[in-house]
Length: 313
Image (cartoon, rainbow, N blue to C red; front, side, top):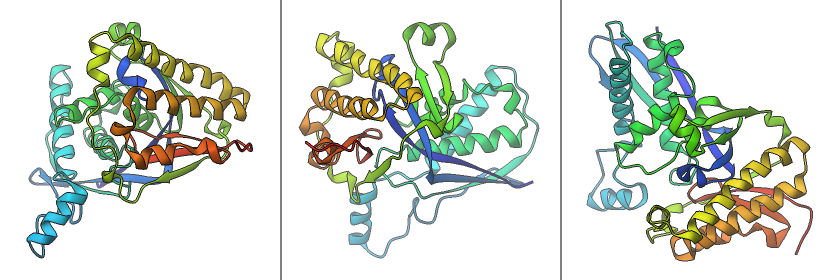
């Protein structure tokens, strides 16, 4: 039986990037962009490279060089390979017996690259969905655990991230997430509360055509937080508190207050990371308050989520 599973792009609405720092976030998945993974039973286990994203044939050295400058060295094959490995290890470690049988996995995606919309984790999440259903073990791996499994597959590849994106893609829709250290230590995961996505006001997604040109300076925020920098710790706590306040604001449909929280989230992130790290493209894209809109990054940069406030400065 052929299995196809989708995972959608993610927008971090409030609280990011505090998920990496035992914080709180609100995120939602969007139907405009997605990754699809297709599983077909086969005699051997095969991971098929994508004809565009895993390109290995070029017209010339100039073509190869320009491609690597714009797209980087990595496609989706490594993501699919990694989740297969981590899925197998998880099942083995937890006494989950997998029936015999091989398959061919292939993927496709239309999520804009390097735009902070969680394109990589969408491929991993969709592949995990195929594996869960091929082996009929979805009921044995609870939904709270699946984001951890996705993140572990990405971390092995050197992808630095938190759980927020993976939670949004596993649960779908609008989700409030509490990653407090108490929950993470006790449960191994956060507390995830799905919300009614129809509570949100009209929002706009704006993403850069060439986001790789933005933000070339490496961030030192993680190291400073780890070293006990009081400014980073207190500011990151305020970012997390924005998500906690945002949950009530969304339930009340207080859009003006939501816009204020979005702008504050952007301002605090800018203070911590600095303009050189974020890059001019991201700074200009995130500064929507000056034209009567609230804007903040959807993720690490390259795209912003905007809400009209009805008020110009």
